[in-house]
Each structure stands twice: as structure tokens, then as C-alpha cells.
Amino acid sequence: MRTRRNILRTATTLGAASCLGRVSGQTATPRPAIQHGPFSSDKQTFQAYSCPNWFRDAKFGIWAHWGPTSAIEQGDWYARNMYIEGTPQNQYHNKTYGHPSKFGYKDTFPLWKAERFDPKALMRLYAGAGAKYFVSMGVHCDNFDLWNSRNHRWNSVRMGPRRDIVGEWRQATRDAGLRFGVSEHVWASYNWWQTNKGADKQGPYAGVSYDGNDPANFDLYFPPHPPGREAWAEQGNESEDWKREWFLRAQDLIDQHQPDLYYEDGPVPFDGWGRSLAAHYYNQSLRWHNGGMEVVYTAKRRGESELGLCTLDIERGVSDNIEPRPFQTDTCLGDWHYKRGIDYKRPKVIVDLLVDIVSRNGNLLLNIPLPASGMPDDRELHILSDITAWMTVNSEAIYGTRPWKVFGEGPAMQKVTGNAGMNGTPEHFNENQRKDLSAKDIRFTAKPGILYAFVMGHPASEIQISSLSQQREGGWQKIEKVELLGSGEPIEWKFTAGALTIASPRTFPSEHAIVFKVIYS
View 1 (cartoon, one colour):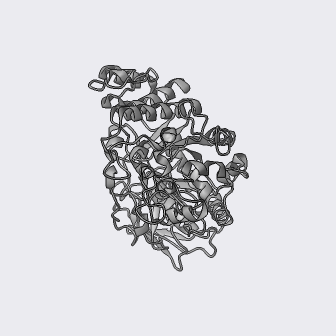
View 2: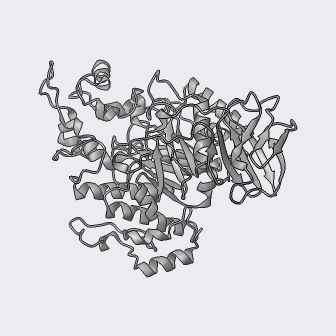
View 3: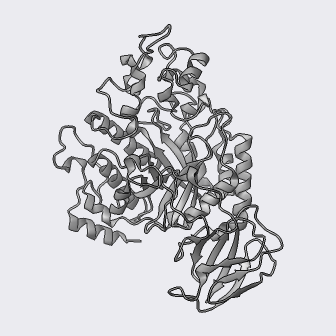
């Protein structure tokens, strides 16, 4: 990790600025000041950033997509889709609450009561399941802030549950000894939510404007503006006033709650505005931590991570190879926001993802969507219990590890193509193309003097690990011992020039992957 002195030296050489207003060519809208320090909107200053070791060691985090949309329990993007005539969510809304001209998204806020929300109890569950950090939703695309926002009246302290959701999550997380993060998704809302300006084209309400056309609610629904080309991308039509509002609210979220991790749902937004937010956050870390860089800003464009501006986040996908820098994959048990009756990922799928991602230098951030009440449903609790049991046995091979020379071997090594979309990272959204890993698939992590070999199923016969061939560059001098995590059973093994061969154990300490600990000198 780079020291504060090195960071300061690098930034001084690059001529870092400490105020947004110093960005050349962007003077139409006054720029708020950022925390003084070595980072600025100048791209070159981010070369001084280095991802902190706590993130590299943590490997597993849990996330809660939970907000007003959760009160409806009809899945993600409800606020947008309820205004699109004929969609399932629009039909549900009309049937349950009435037409969006009379009962709009704003009118659903009182339905979110959070009556069973107990963040301390949830954090005991999440920490028990092995999470080392927790991420709270800060604000989703529905433009509703989940903290006591200084810049936006539509927030959870003034409306809905009338609680500082982010603040309560933060306190519970820190009390449990976990690192705390927040997520922000609102940058895209300017175009994502144009649907609230429409009207039905047919039926009894044809031509009747939705409630998003009422000027009294423009600070939630946005004023009318020329439409963008698509729902989810930076369009170039965003007003400077919106960019400034986005920045002030994001800055307020950071300053009030001092998160260890800030998740940006997309690329770093709005050029200099977004770079200045990252700079503010990094400079704040140096102030909060006596010169230490202890924060992680994740975003989804590979080029920006290579610059040092952010840590790469891959949505619902796995990188093809060992990444040279730490990264994060985020995924969900089902839909991002709670949806009644949806099928969830099986525990084996989650274990497979976790191991595969960690073997490639990544972390897994798993969203457990909460229903309106704030308490996971019984199926979610069962999955958490399964993860807890597996991590209790095998977490030694997860936490604090680093990638080995190769991430694995076996039949499931083929590349899978995802959807790069606006993010320029082809691994996004490739998880559904993946098959279950089997006992023929091996994944590796390492610590000094130790190699952990994950056998991704229960082998019926001996296991051969060819990646340990003595002919490999930097091959092994001597294997001292092979153990099976969670088992006291003596393990029979032999090592030849071609492979390490391990006899199948008589019993399996884990329901899913099992881990052999190879101790060498």
C-alpha cells in the first residue's frame, strides 16, 4: 500500500487541484468544493491510488437492495415500469393501487413501514455467514434518499419508515466489526425515469397524464426535458443543474456516513463531476484515517479501474482470468429488489461463484433483497444457513488469500461471453451461462507456504491435480502435508512429476466444495 508521503509526492508532481471549480472548460455551473488533498478531477492524480488490504482480505460481502420499491415486492425497476403501459408491474399497480395519474410512485412511500427491520439482528446473521463487509443501499434510481439527506426532501427520515436507514445499517455494521459500504444508483435517473412523464395510449385513461407531470413533484420526478436514447446510460442530455445535485447528494452521503466502500452503479458519471467525487472520497479517507487510504470506490468500466480511478465491479459475472488488480463481482439471490415467489440461486451456485471469483483475485458482493418488513423470508434464511455452514468449515481458504499461478483446472475453464454494454467489460451478466462446477473442477487460492485446492464437488475416486506438476515454472521443492479442512481424517496422497494425487476422503465435511490444504516448503 502506498504511503501518504508517496501519494502526496505523486499528486504534487501532477499538479493536483483541490476544488471542482478548477476544472478547465466547465464553468457554466458553479462547482462545490471538495476535501483538500492530493486527488482531484485530473485523471493523472488517481495513479497514486492503491486498493487497501482490508478489501483484498475480506473476499465476501452482503448487500441489501432495500427501499420504497421493496414495499411493493414486485421486483426491480418498479418505479420505472409502473409507468410503462402494459408491463406486468404496470398492470399490478393499476389493479392494486389505481392508475398512475391518481396513485403514483410517490404515493407508495407510506407503504414502506420497515416494521420488522432490526439491523443488529441481521448483522449477526450476515457476520455469521462469513461476510466481512456490508453494503447499504444509499439511493436507487427512484430518486429517494435512504438517509437524512441535506439536499433532498424525498428521504426515509421525512417519509416512509421515518428512519435513517443508512445510519442504522452503518451503526449495526460497525458494532459487528464489519466494514461498511453504501451504493448509489441515482446518476442515471434523469433519463431512466422519463416514463413518469407519459400517459396511457389506450383504455379509459388514454391521454391522462401520469403524476410525474405535476410541477409540485418535479424534485422527485424531474422536470420535463428532451428524452434520452435509452434508460441506462449517460446520454449527454443531462443538465448541469442535475449533475450538481447528484454530486452534492453523493458528497453528503459520503461525508455523513464515512463508508469504507462506495458502489457506483455504472461507470464513473459525468466526467469531471464523477472524478471529483472520487477525489473527494479519497481525500476524505486520508483525513479520516490519519493519512491512510482505507476506502474503495467501485465502478464498472475497466478502463477507469486501470487508471486507478476506481476498483472494477463486474455485475452478475466472473472474469475470464486472474485479474491483475482486486475486483468485485456483485450478484443477487434473485431479483435486485424483492419479488414474491421468485426462484433463488441454490447455495451450491453461490459457493461456486464465491470460490471461482476469489481464485481470480476478486470479492463476491451478494445481495439479499429484503421484503417490505425488513426481515428476510424463510427461503433466504435457509440459504444463509447453508452459506454459514460452508464458511464455518472452509473460510480459512477464502479470507486473506491471494491468487496462485493459475486460478484452476478442469472442464469448466472455458470462457463465457457476457454483455459489455456501456461499461466496456465483457464479463458483465455472464453468470447465467455458467454450469455447476463438479468434483472434476479444481480452484486455487494461496497463502505463504500454503496452497488451498478447492474440489468443487464430492469426488467418487482419487483426485489428480495436474497444475502441481514439478515441470511447472517455479515448481515445488517439497510438499510437507495435505489436510482436508474440517476433517481430522488422515489424507493419503502422493506427488509425482505429473500431478498431486489425493485419495478421496471417506467423509466430506462440507455439503458443496471441499478444500485440501497443501502445506509445502
